[in-house]
Image 1 (cartoon, helix red, strand yellow):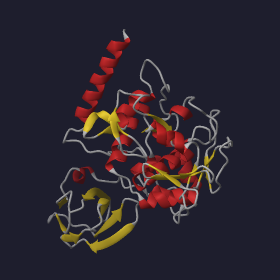
Image 2 (spheres, one colour):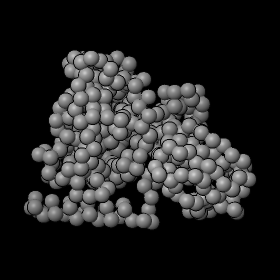
Image 3 (cartoon, rainbow, N blue to C red):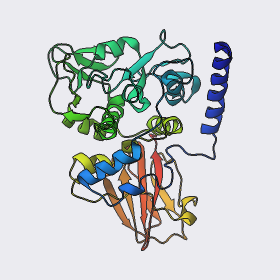
Image 4 (cartoon, rainbow, N blue to C red):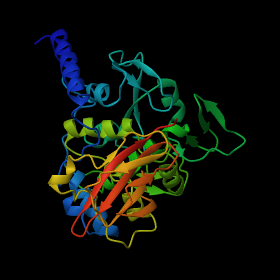
Length: 357
């Protein structure tokens, strides 16, 4: 089969995929039923091990190949939702021509491939959860610097990102800080030193550019960025696309609150997912409108929960109301929120989007 024919087939497959993905009957960020069941009711290291076992042993693809490779997957996972022929670049937000690989964009290893010295070998160097389409100049400038707030007099700016070649730190623009953090969290849990893979860990230290230690920092800053930049629709969609190829997901996109259970204040608390939705309520319209710009939502009059909770995208509860309330005032800050309807025997969770007026 000629390479031209292969390329045409790939383009057709991308088109079919996007028609399927953008169909109005489907929602992004749809976690497969039961995907996280084995992590239920676990805490701390037992929870981390359970999550590792869930996302381990995924399908891996070659870095570059005449067949399906990481270039091909990124053209779908990082595609511009307004132009499926383009990809959105991390660190700049640019929308550039997808097929123009090498000349128009390249691939960024968010967990720098020298941190553990795995390069582009499979599976660590080709794990698409860790790869992002990138502006080649910014990618080069980022080098393998530690992620940290750039507060030094030596800091310079490139496309809204701050960096210091003497302090060896790179601070992405605000829109990408949470994305970067959740990729690093994924890599730490996915790669635990099995099967001749590196055992990756976060560190508080800023490492030399020559260090090949399987450590990446700065841990406290990444935890902060996760809070400051919540999961957005681009990440949710990207997680779905990569799952369709690799067969594994980024748990910290599906359940941002897991960060607090592994590295925050909830380490000694047993985690429960939000997936216990009874079948009869999953597809019901429990409130209107969604999305909402400002004001109140109306709860279905036939719904009688014990109480209703509002959570932000980081899994922090910001309000609780009695189930008898049929109108709820929503937060004014734009973003993704979750409504938790608590009944005697079950919990139902629904996603709601608050848009800026």
